Image 1 (spheres, rainbow, N blue to C red):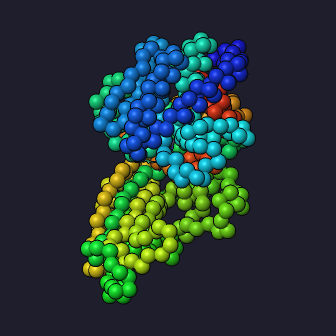
Image 2 (image 1 turned 135 degrees about the vertical axis):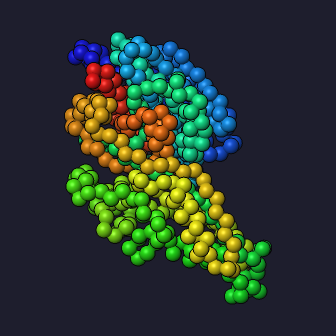
Length: 459
Ligand code: BES
Ligand code: MN
Ligand code: MN
């Protein structure tokens, strides 16, 4: 891209800002909550909207593929089959907006406040997907993209991408590309660009602990019969020792140990503990002994409770010794750990520590494998140079704590590596009430993406 071409990109964005936002807002108004079946038609409507947006941006063709779950949107702009091809992945589904009462403005009525777009999905991932659609429009209006671009935008990322592996296997030819580009992660700060070069994997399980075969009067039976809530809590307590080290036998066996030099590199990323605690409203941080916060979230596996349920939780008091207690548990995994193996190790251990007074049932949910992405590839360098140009600073390679399970799946099924060029911030409250995405970040993305293509096509 010449200097004049670059200037025309900037002026095109400048003169279309308002429309870009209006169009994004329309997508944000669609409650495409993949986890909840009552939103199924809304999820389908979001897929249609993404397809139409891609068509309007100027793709050659855009298609919707139904799956046993939510549909996949595929589109392509083939400039010349001899040129390189980038496959853009993203998701148009969103997390449930609950708890609703904590939103300052309704989750599906986008609003701009303090230069930020507030809505469920504004950052994760509709806003970031839309940057790519608008970047394509910008490129087409200013001379055309310098290589081929394919889009794969799915509707099941937030529920484990159950049907995407099958879709990928069935459409290997269609999805042929040289690299995958994803904007579904965060940068360190608006004045500190970064690119994620690793994501954690995931094992997600639900446990059910059953004591007596029906709820009991806590006075008549209490003291004589095991309380499943108490037992569940005791079992959970046994999952970590006083160093916050996970006690599941074999859990750490496959964990890749980083060299002191690699750990040193990782810890060079800016991190202000005081700010971090202040933002979260905690006096003290807690985690595995011997590791820094950046290590605890980047290169170490975790065991977290996501939800716990049992007994009476309604208004007032009810004296009951409940029959059942439940918990939802996620374990984040790091390179060389395998989600299936970890789920099995958890199952074996959890079963082995259950007292005879209760029965346990374990239901595995989705899983995903950890990944590390290369920093010495042409695509990474193209992304880093693009960000350096628009942010005025070289991006720092970092390890993201979240999971995007399809990254490892694409590597396995398509033999393709990904570049995780995200533009969100960790403080954007993704998955929480009041999720938002900075206008700065949205437009910075639209500005940076064409430079990525320019750099990559030239490499
Ligand atoms: N975009 C996130 C993942 C993410 C967030 C990566 C921030 C790095 C930094 C994605 O939509 C997500 O939420 N993934 C889920 C996994 C999925 C299997 C439900 C997650 O990480 O919990
Ligand atoms: Mn996401
Ligand atoms: Mn998410």
